[in-house]
Image 1 (cartoon, rainbow, N blue to C red):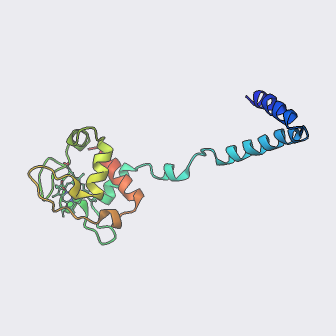
Image 2 (image 1 turned 90 degrees about the horizontal axis):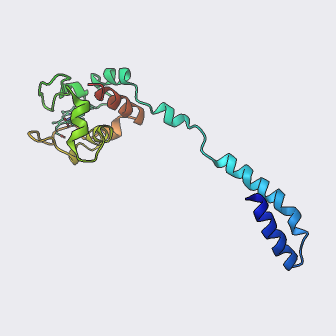
Image 3 (image 1 turned 180 degrees about the vertical axis):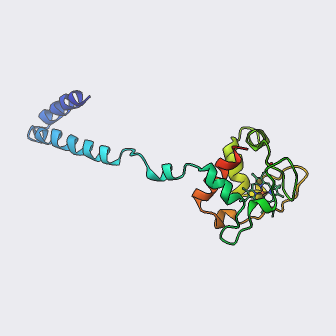
Length: 149
Ligand code: HEC
């Protein structure tokens, strides 16, 4: 590829009588390569940080966080219905709730925008401010936990 480009440029520069510019080509292309390497995808620490921690999620589930009520005030982890649905078998339920939506995405949407999908037989009474009160890591941890149920 590089050699091919070089030949084309050599031809062009000869045509326009400016072969001196050719010297610049290797310099310019190594610079470009440097830029590409520097800007290329690097392992992102943020992504690793945002892996959900189910054990932490289990703790968060029963804690009031940042002024928001604990999930466990309305949800059991058995099949028992409280204010909201029980979470026994949630990983399976979540995968089937909305066509073409993964269990993870369904859980995420349910937590951050509870009104976007109302489980049949329930009303839109879930606390609606979790997206503002929980940080992204806490949301990931809760989802990881729910998907173990
Ligand atoms: C004030 C009561 C209340 C609190 C607190 C609450 N929820 Fe809910 N939640 C509900 C109700 C009611 C529903 C059913 C209506 C709906 O789908 O929005 C629901 C639905 C859900 C669903 C969908 C369940 C299903 O079977 O499809 C998920 C997931 C969920 N909540 C997660 C959470 C998490 C995680 C927390 C804590 C961060 C939480 N909820 C806190 C009341 C609550």
